Image (tube, rainbow, N blue to C red; front, side, top):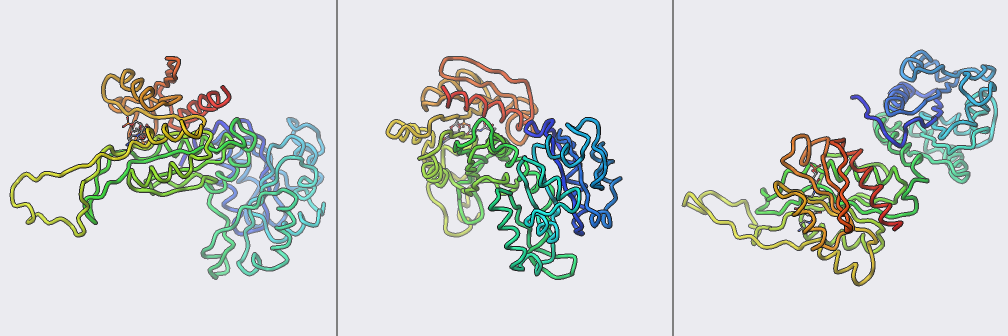
Length: 415
Ligand code: PMT
């Protein structure tokens, strides 16, 4: 699947070190997705890595020469012609994926016995290591100690996953898939972003109000906008909590994930996490009503012989109103962003909600607009603030809309 551009990775200079693990083939996909996301990827392969994958595979997906030899001169666009200096000096991140036990040991010992090891010594950028090896090797005290040494020097170690290993055994040692690696790379790249040191809470998805053990009342929210907001918060360096009713989307790497179903559960989770939140963004589609009674067993047709049947509903708590009351007492969250899902009188309804709920910003989206609202990959919003300012970004991906919203929320936080 084509990887969309990622603002955070646009023109980022990433060195990808590839070592002699069977998982080296996965690094080709990682190099490809990083390049598609907008990064400039310089690959360094160890001799052992070339027994699994050829340099040509990486050159094909990165469009750049691959480094395999300590004595190679660097490509002309690098700061100096000495490869390991030129590569290390200009890099934003050094990622070694997969990292064999041998390479982990060489890094821990500070060896300089090949181009990758020398570059790791010369580089001043963060080091991100993704070990991949047989389970017994990963569990060995020597490997654990070497990884601890790297962590103590500030390296980020991406834990391998459990599963089927090349040896045929089951165990922990599998290189994670590209989306997971990409998530860790984003987290490392975003560490000094505009929301570094800040805490952002995002809600996503439509609440599910149970009717009986089989059925519930809900809405069409897919969670895409909320998940994109959580990812944008992570990319901006924030400590991010995602409170979600959705399980169909992979939780963004680095987010604290809090699963909920009903509006009442969401209220409880929001209040628990907002006590110290700088920013709350309520992108979730919260039901205003729930069935007055939840049947203990599946409701049978025979129970209501008539054609019509009535369903008694109860009002759900208004989460943003509860947050407003809490904020009046404690001052937290510092900034509250609401959404308005409207089908008519978009700006009037949105402004009424901004004022009634005491919001700093409200994101008005006309859910009847094509390519916007529920389930779409794009959204068309109008951002209103308390000073009646309106910002009308063009129709864009929910990722881009999220970046714009986070920029506005960060500005409100500074203001
Ligand atoms: O999830 P997607 O498929 O990507 O779709 C995105 C979206 C359309 C769901 C999203 O862009 C959106 O509009 N979310 C808000 C939906 C909603 O509930 O809007 P509303 O106008 O009904 O509620 C106004 C605000 O009050 C919202 O921030 C809502 O989270 C909040 N609310 C609503 C009801 C309630 N009981 N408590 C609340 O806090």
